[in-house]
Length: 201
Image (tube, rainbow, N blue to C red):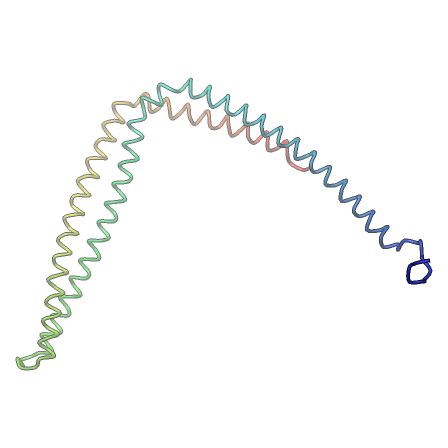
């Protein structure tokens, strides 16, 4: 008997058995996945250790030729950055040139609208404003042109330096480049082998 006087029923709802069974199955699946995770982590640590050892060996093997070729690669990087600056300066010059042309067109239209009338203050104001825009646009165009010219000179100098270093360090560049590519292919092969081990089939 319960406290309220009703009959106590000792039978368990059958849905509880179903849910308990599902809970047990889920727990088994979780345990299985945790074991797989631990195995994968161990394999990853081993792969990382192997890869680090191989990279260190490659670095020791290629150390000198890579170091000798470094100025060439740095010069190439610098030349690429200067090329981007040159492109930016060229776009700036194009915009300034377009603005100058548009301002000159405004002056022409203002002069046409003014005609022979010299007493119309609205047209005079428009002409003055258009003339000021032409002057500003011409100044901006001159600055942009100078910046573009300087950027082109810097780019040519950077390319000349790259060419000079390429001739001077040709052997080190070739050796480092081929060795690095070969080593990267080996590392990629090792990685793909390890990935194949973990495929779920």
